[in-house]
Amino acid sequence: MNWKVSKGSGNVSGSNRNVSRSNVNVTGSNRNCKMLKIKRNYHMNEPQLRIGIMYEPKISFHLNGIYIFQQNGKEYTGKQEVVYTDGKIGFDGLRLSSEELVFSPKYYEKGSFDLLDVTIGIKFHWERKEDQRFKGALHFICENEKLTAINVLSLEDYLISVISSEMSATSSMELLKAHAIISRSWLIAQVLKGAELQKSKTKYQSIVETDQEYIRWYDREDHVNFDVCADDHCQRYQGITKQSTQLVVDAIDATRGMVLTSEGKVCDARFSKCCGGVAETFENVWEPENHKYLQAVIDNPKAPAGYDMNLKKEEVAEKWIRTSPEAFCNTTDKEILSQVLNDYDQETMDFYRWEVAYTQGEISELIKRKTGKDFGQILDLIPVERGESGRLIKLKIVGKKRSLVIGKELEIRKVLSESHLYSSEFVVDKVGEENGIPAKFILVGAGWGHGVGLCQIGAAVMGAKGYKFDEILLHYFRGAELEKRY
Image 1 (cartoon, one colour):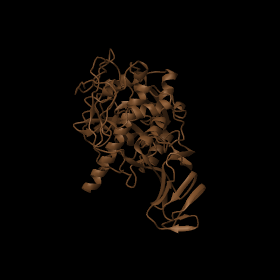
Image 2: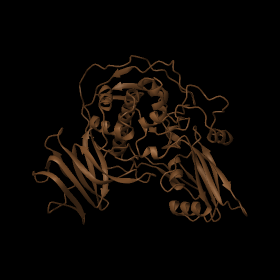
Image 3: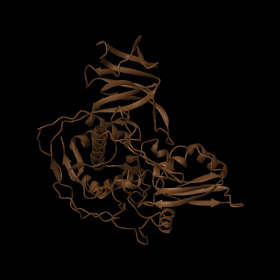
Image 4: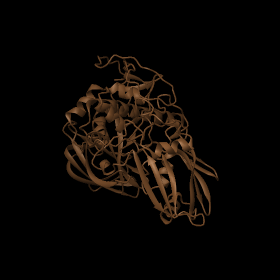
């Protein structure tokens, strides 16, 4: 990403409201809260981003319009192919050892390129391949005996795609504005975090392992040669493949350069599909670092009647998960859901509460394959520690041959599913026990995703109920401020 100091100035249209701060552990939405006041703090130009799109030994692509190949200055258009061979990149009869091949559009606004057979939804239940079209420049690099295709373009152009890829382009304007701001904030925060780690030469620690425990969290630590990837690991990005609408463009333009900040720093503004009724805290999912704007929040104007909200307690979490308490994200309204869920997301409709069943043979084979350890027959899955939302931070797998505590939430989801379990917020039913060996395990769960920060389905419902974008942001990111950085 290119960062430059800017002395720009300008006017910002929008609400002029103050931030209502709250450090309460678990709180509901307060519709009477004051809205966010937009600060003007211009000190950068619009950044240029590097997005890793695909990773293959051979990549076919189509240049729509004239592109200039930096290595020889020639102009190219139409279908092309690059191939990795013995540490070099083969293109147009050339074998190039250059660190990075660059194709730049002769006319930025007119140029685009197609990448063929891009895998989307990597290791998720809806994984598939599709051809995708992108705006901007196309770069190729060698990584681990394969080629990586990198799209280089401006941040605001990137956001138009992200908003259309993450959600339906028919979403409400207030939801689109809110999502534009958190997507922009998250991206800038991640790039700044990566730059700080590189500058400090500190190795990013994401695994804690002993004989009794294997605790791992997943972030963007794998991305060294580009800012973010194009899949759900970072933010879903499918170029200009997905048809955008003028509403999306207007939402990006209306919030241009706006980010959420806390104590002068850009917020690491996370989001997931469905929190399941309560948002989770950052440190329970990723590195043990508290962010006061990423706290547990009840996804409702008030706590549901008849529920204890201390979901870290097992009996309390069990009641919460096995029932269907009122929440913004507890909806079956197809019109609202279509705003947030693309066609392949709508293949899954049991997002608020769900159930997954495994036979003894299935679960013992799955856990052995996913962990690389032979547990033998699985005797039990025991909750060890839960977070504020009821999501499991640690789970003990008890087998006939060995036992192990695993965490954090994504590691649990990976081990207990062919792709990713919907969430780690679940309780376990054992069925047909004989000599202490269950014949079947049933996981009864809540929510879809890690649950930290903005709940996309909950935010869609808030938008449909008339909440403004800054009210939506304040509900999920308590104590944050809104700044215009460029």
